[in-house]
Image (tube, rainbow, N blue to C red; front, side, top):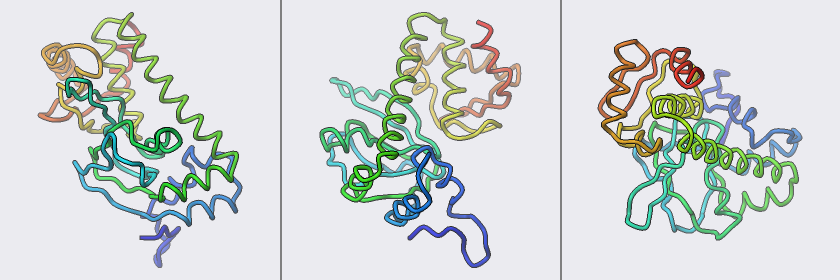
Length: 236
């Protein structure tokens, strides 16, 4: 499906506002924006659909317009490690495109997604022709590296409760919402991301549920009170 700014009724159901405001296009001239976006197609992806697998050849580049995606990598013994969640405005795994040419991570849809999709060769040519795109790609990589460094510091210096609270807020921001929203990660996933046990995460979520901060579900957590949850890690 080609990208359309508005349909016959003048609505914005294809996420044009998200495209224009995406960090990928920061500082891009209107002419370059139209040319680059016109080279993409719009696709929808169902929940649990695999977007790409670690080790596969990079064949396309995706700019998320809605939904969320789990970015993972396998350890030497086959244990899945969750790096981050991708949300609206994220461009997925361009590091691999300009590196080995093979995906260094796996991406799976958590919440149904819409995305702009470019062929890998087409996107690479666009980046090489537009210096501002190159700078924006560097900012993406630096942002992801900064997040990993922050999580490592928290693991080494902070107690479990503020670590888990901060990770939930971080995930909330990554999926593009500041209000009540469901984070599609299990207790086991959340424990893995914060360097603790599933039992400890369950105990914390139960305590926070009693105070109205969260609503734990079987394979997800609904954040109900963002302000109070933020205080957990800001005041510890």
